[in-house]
Length: 442
Image (cartoon, rainbow, N blue to C red):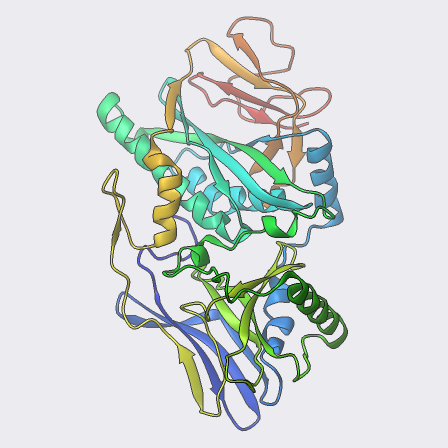
């Protein structure tokens, strides 16, 4: 599977601060399959007398926001203006392995498309995937159920689970209902249907709509604060104003009299693991410990809200000391988890939650295209191949369903690939033809 490293087993991670004479270094290690691994991407070094926020201001948060280019923003504006909610990823060369194009697209193209959809005050995205499987002279359409994604950090894991479940459905169907094996099939079309939940930036409900990432929501004990210890709205507003002021004017240097602990959220680019890191740790002058707050940012790295924590979140890299090394590490791997309905086992609690959201795949469907039917999607919006790796098109008009032999108002040579041309834009064609169904260009 061509996904970046995302272990089926939860890695036993350590997030380590090493203090030396003049420097403080942060690095990430984990044990997977009995081997100690040094993370190549989670590394930062600052002066010993600098606050921990400088680890993330200089190298962490600034690189994690997804900034769209002017051209990409223009395409997104067109998508919104035309209310495009259906997209096709297409590839005519994916004939060597059933899951090559599907796997590559679900590893990069589909997650990138969903990240786009999280821009412009979007707080939630619901999507489903459909893949068109070419089995000799027929086309089978496998479609997932709808899945809601409440945080942009959840995108890759959600798409990964949908991909795994779809591929399992395809394999099961072919083994039971077809004389052909996986080696005789290919996928050259993926359809993504997206529904966005958006609020006006000035809406009073906007801030409360931002959810925690799923990996944090699924931690044992949760991340909710009891009402008796929660911060009042006035205190939270004052703290938010102070944070924004000092972040913008002092670049993460906060005054000593700011008697709270602030934590930031980072994602390991190698394992996709989320972890909480110290941002501002204040001395405790009272008998009661300082309150802890998690800084939540949107997909562009812009501030969303402060989330109060009951305690530092498990698996986080928290705290500094005068010792040479401080770290936080789970002591043992988690126990396997099992879905009560279908008995499927998981080692990630977040994957089990996604699986249950999809009702164990009961909403997945399979259909077949009639041998004489051709689907045509005209005047599609082309989206740069550089962004999604494969050709991607937004569907601007309802599909036209025709029978072969009927007049088709486009130039089309069914014997060659990538040959569909129309006057006003590209066209996606899906056919049950023995030769590859064409798609593309201007």
